[in-house]
Length: 162
Image (cartoon, rainbow, N blue to C red; front, side, top):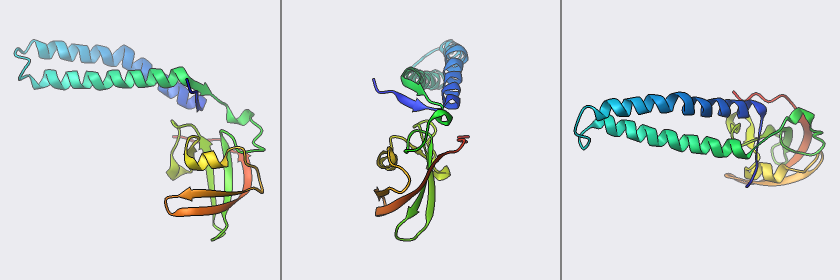
């Protein structure tokens, strides 16, 4: 069973969602199904079919959350050294062609938000960066082609996911 690294905040958020689905949403949907059942013929009962579909989606989400939480490895990146790129590291890269500076933070799949510079530890870019240190050169295959970067800095910065 592969562990899923994540921040404490993400773990709490997923746990709250799971608990709410189990304790509140299940009961709500069961009530809607019962009420729809009382309307008669189930073959042509749109409310019943919609409620059953919603129930199926909710149960799938419960199963997904149960799996993620069961495999969660909660990591506090502020306690790690960050001499080498690891979970929670913020990495400043310099594009060797354009001298453009880019900055990424390595996070778990749940926290990933590339538009905010938060890249999943399972992404191809993160896999290339993991274990590297300041001064290293890396070649990363991006959708636009291969690019070479110099690792300018590896550090820890507090991570804002929301």
